[in-house]
Length: 100
Image 1 (tube, one colour):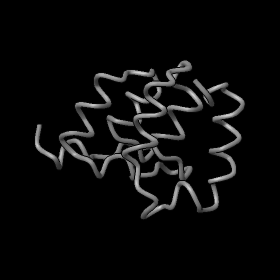
Image 2 (cartoon, rainbow, N blue to C red):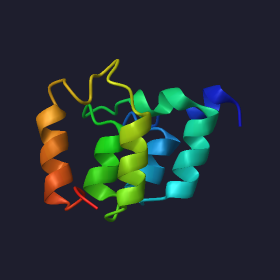
Image 3 (cartoon, one colour):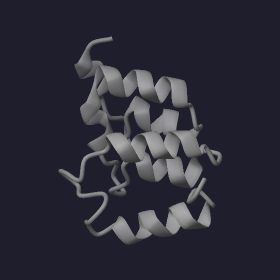
Image 4 (cartoon, rainbow, N blue to C red):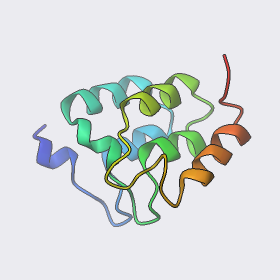
């Protein structure tokens, strides 16, 4: 698929990577990020990145959360220091995704 197609947003401002994160699909997420690394920093209409979606809805996939945490940059929406950073940390803790 062309990069432009992978960056296409739906009516909620989400990409294919958002939906792969929703279901905790590590293999698809890795393939999408390898093709288009910028996908990790696209926020939906709520301001949520794919990392946030993986933490909230990713069915407890620690592998996906850690992968997305490593490949997500703290720009342009500043997921690690911006207005939703506290919510991200709270979601990681609530989902039991810290530690081993």
